[in-house]
Picture 1: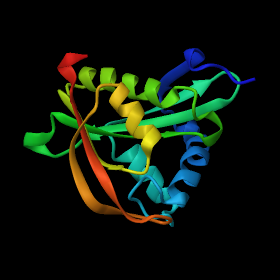
Picture 2: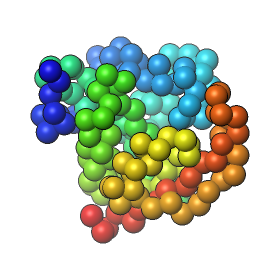
Picture 3: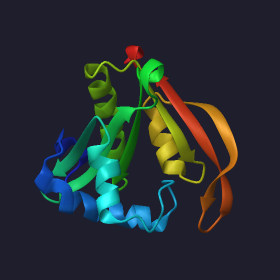
Picture 4: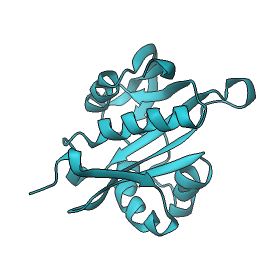
Amino acid sequence: MTAPAGELTIRPFADDDWPRVWAIIEPVLRAGETFPFSPELEEDEAYQLWVQTPTATWVAEDERQGLVGCYYLKPNQPRLGDHVCNCGYIVAGSARGRGIGGALCRHSQRVALQFGFRAMQYNLVVATNESAIRTWQRNGMTVIGRLPGAFRHPRHGDVDALIMYRWLTSI
């Protein structure tokens, strides 16, 4: 029996979390179906992208399963566009379908406001990632653009990617 999402603790990333975070994100990155990073990305490069470069990284922990997800938060653009943030989320395969992605999304929106961001933008939501799209829409994200054939999917070929956006002062 797994813990429901209501028993989830979302907390800031700590350095000793990295091996467990890597165990969650590595299979997703290797699959090459949802993130634009190379499926051959080395662990140290992933650490830089997921932990060192972002403004903050958070982990979701469940008392029965341990770490079950994570996200990073960073400015989407430099300087005059740095009031809009960008996030990347990954939920462990064994924990999907429990509302963890939605919990991470809601948490990131609150944290973004605390960091002074006023909006959130997802730049490349792969159109075949339908469960993520539904989750983001349920949490206030709106599709504001469609990029035809912008993602080279390993099974489906070139697929569309969505740009999603939310003005955060409405939460």
